[in-house]
Image (cartoon, rainbow, N blue to C red; front, side, top):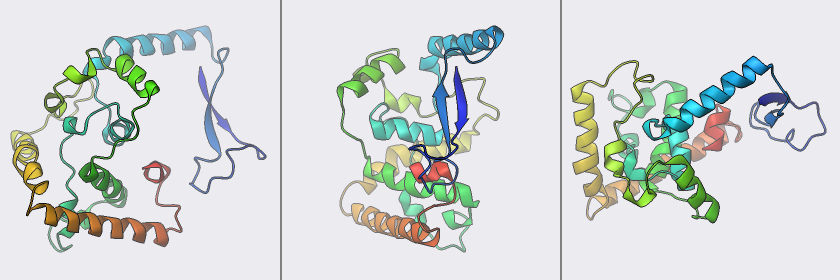
Length: 215
């Protein structure tokens, strides 16, 4: 089983300035835990494996999969950086969001607009086969945008919310990627990067949380 190990000093992971992430690491120990606990973990692992094609990760985890190349950007609802151009006195401005939400949306919107994907290595191709239950190139990513396991759906999306997402996805995004509307996107990306640099400098490059630092 995996257990949380707290570094005591002198280890290679203690040098990070990123909050607690440098002092806590997950370590695999096959003998850790009681037989009952091990059985519960194995059952949960098997249930996830059996239903993995029905499970969609949360926002920041999903973004990591997209950056690695395990999930296409087309399978995500838009995270438009253009919202950063809205003045703060408008309710839709991200500047009015809670600090953690705002600073998570900040780099995510930039990566989404860039559609950034790392190199596709043999390991990535192998993981694609393991994670997805059908060939990667045959997945209809647009159909996965509103997907959610029933166990995770605490509050169903209202119709108006799905309509808004679909409008942004089908109409707005294609326009913002073509001239002359792509000029607006370029301006939004510059503004977004300006905010990112400001937050880095303001926090001395520690940022507000360890999850945000990784992104």
